[in-house]
Length: 198
Image (cartoon, rainbow, N blue to C red; front, side):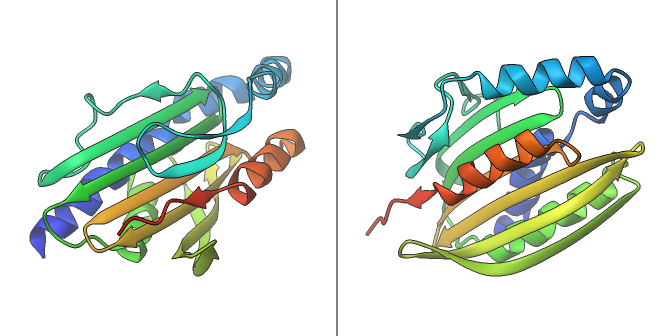
C-alpha cells in the first residue's frame, strides 16, 4: 500500500509541474499582449489526433510534446513509464502512463493531485470536483477545478484511468479567462481514446 501511495504522490508532483509555474502565470498576467501571444502560439501548433508516445492514449495533441520519461520519477516501483508534456506560458498539457509493481488507483491519484495543488502554495484557493467518467470502454476519474493563483484564474482539467498496475493520466491547465484555450481544452479532452490492454 505504501508503494502505491508513494507512486501517487510522486506522479502527482510531476503533473503538478503542468499546473505549476505560478511565476509564469503571474508574469503573463502582467501583460495581456504577452498572454495573447502565448495563446496564438499554442493554437498555431499542429494539433492532430495521434497516439502520444507509448502511453496507450490517442488524443488531440501537438507533434512537439517533450519526452520527460527519463527525467521524471513517476513511481519508485515503476516497471515502465512514458511522460509527454507541452507547455507554454499559462498553458500546460501532459499525457503519462506508468506501470508499477503494485496496484495504482486513478481516484487516489486525482485526490492526491488536488492535495498537491492545495499544498503547493501556488494557489490561494482551489475549487474542484472529482467524478467518475467513462471514455470509450475505460472507466476513470475526471478532475475539474479552478484555482486562484496570485489573482489569476487557472483552470485544471484532468482524466485518470487505472487498470490494476497501469495508470494513464491526461492533464491540461490554462488561463481560466481565455475562451480560446478553454475551447481547445474541451476539444483535447473530448478526443481522448484509451487503449484497452489485456
